[in-house]
Amino acid sequence: MNVLIISPGYPADMPEFTRGLAESGATVFGVGDQGTAALPGLVRSQLADYVQVRSLWDTPAVIKQLHDRLRGSTLDRIECLWEPGIMLAAELRQHFGVPGLSIEQAHRFRDKEAMKVALDNAGIRTPRHAAVDSSAACWEAAEEIGFPVILKPIAGAGSADTYRIESRDDLRAVLPRLQHVPTISVEEFVDGEEYTFDTITVGGRVAYYNVAWYRPRPLVARSNEWISPQVVALRDVDAAYLQEGVKMGHDVIAALGFDAGFTHMEWYRKQDGEVVFGEIGARPPGAHQVDQMKYACDFDVFRTWGQAVTTGEIDAKVERHFNVATIYKRARGVGRIARYEGVDALQKRYGQHVVWNTLLPPGIPRRDWRKTLVSDGFVMLRHPDLAETLEMADAVGSELQIFAE
Ligand SMILES: Nc1ncnc2c1ncn2[C@@H]1O[C@H](COP(=O)(O)OP(=O)(O)OP(=O)(O)O)[C@@H](O)[C@H]1O
Ligand SMILES: [Mg+2]
Image 1 (cartoon, rainbow, N blue to C red):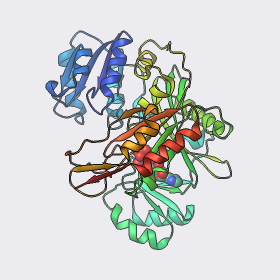
Image 2 (image 1 turned 120 degrees about the horizontal axis):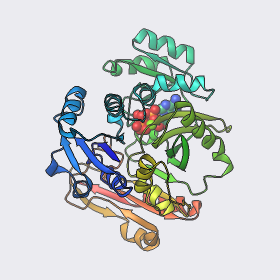
Image 3 (image 1 turned 60 degrees about the horizontal axis):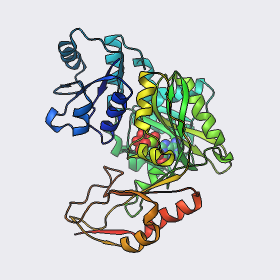
């Protein structure tokens, strides 16, 4: 089986996914804009061949270069786990006659309006919504939906250009800042807790899923620098309060006709228990949330995904042993990481539960917290009991401080 993976070296967990494909028995080809020398060693060791293109966003040029290089060999699957490349993968599939998500299907995972229309038609509860491309239409939609509303780009990511609008005054103030966004999605603001529903799907059937809880909601975390955002992969996914969300997740996969691979859905649960769809991507979540799945169940998620897309069967017997919390830290101050506070005491109390620590060492310039959820590094920890997990996560959030100078 020949599998082409788009951008095998970037972002950070693509090398592991490339390994997962190779270990499930596929011959793996890569295409990307990184130079071969810049590819992580793990990727180079797993690829049968790599085509470096000048730009991944020039589809005809990518097709031509692939043709030239692949002459003779056929492709059985084309995979992309990176949001910006989802449409390219679909275009390549169409061109090379490879099964998987079609252009039309992929569009429904990329365009937040098309996505919600498809789900409305399947009877799934989405936020009331409209897509608008002028200020006048935006006013009309906001009045019709009713304040508060959310404004966001129709193909956004990372909460960029996303605003909660409480009133007409807010709308008046924010509209000028959205001039550069061609189409805006206006949505009913849904108040509640926010969760994920992440799957490895095989032949249209959800073979594995993960539910994670965002603490606090991403828009709040991305608007307040002092917060240490948490993502908590939950052990007890059978808990009653999650059941409607999990059912919605299964219904969404079916409604969008997703066949095989990773998906990442976000959903809201209101205080009265009502469950509302948020968004879905035809890819795994970022910020090392796939590693959380690995630590929650002690299984090779990457190889399981590889099996799902190549053999159509997964052999892992997944058992959930742990809740896994990731706490993303943001330094205070500007410049380079200078010192830490609280690490030793936390290490002594909770060190045995920490599975991964990527906090930047002193001397490294601090990162732009608005551009990366990972910020200045994270602590990942796990515990079988949720209350204990949250207590540790909150302690890391409040007692561990990083200072930059
Ligand atoms: N209708 C809504 N009601 C309440 N909050 C919302 C709504 N739409 C978006 N948000 C908030 O804004 C955040 C970002 O929105 P959304 O997930 O749609 O965009 P995104 O930029 O693709 O996100 P990301 O890439 O960070 O997952 C959500 O996680 C949520 O906190
Ligand atoms: Mg989102």
